[in-house]
Image 1: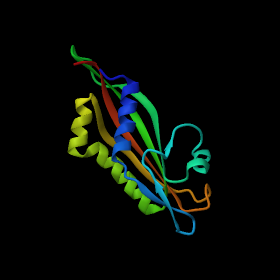
Image 2: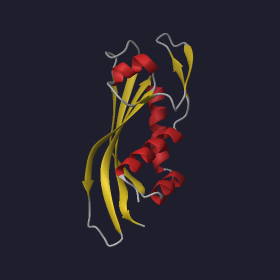
Image 3: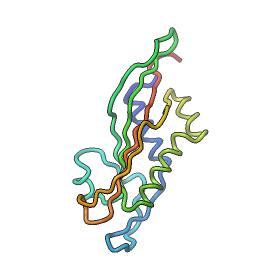
Image 4: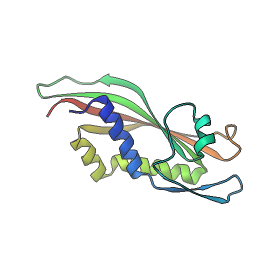
Amino acid sequence: MPTEEYMLEAFENAIRQNTTDLRRYNIDGEDIGFAQSKSYWVNLGHPEAEWTKYGLPQIGIHKIGGYTEGDDTWDSRWEGVMMRVDIFASGRGQRTRLAGDIKRGFFNRVSRFSLVGSGIKVDKVLSDDDSVEDDMLAQDVQTRQITFSVYFNTSGA
């Protein structure tokens, strides 16, 4: 029976497993190596502070609300949360590629059935917004915020 902590770990793990390693480029467009998909996560602090340590791209995961929807039955209780994923990328191509990897990780058939079998259902995308944050760093910083509706089974089989 999943707890909210278990659901958050599974959500993050699904993103980690489905994002590809990306090449990083400096402001002049020169290749500065790979950013491994396990090493560029925003965990604590403001993203600007994390950029100075780790560079781009980065992905932040935030729980932004919770609710119980529907009636409890004798064998199950589903609770819902809204999860926001912030993508900070160097350029439009990188931002689009990361967003596609994340969505495919939740909505392709195999990944979706695997999560549902674990008691977690990524229901739908509530919002998907792009922006350009040139004032934060002296490079083409592209951000994207994707908000998902997620349900997890808190009781029953």
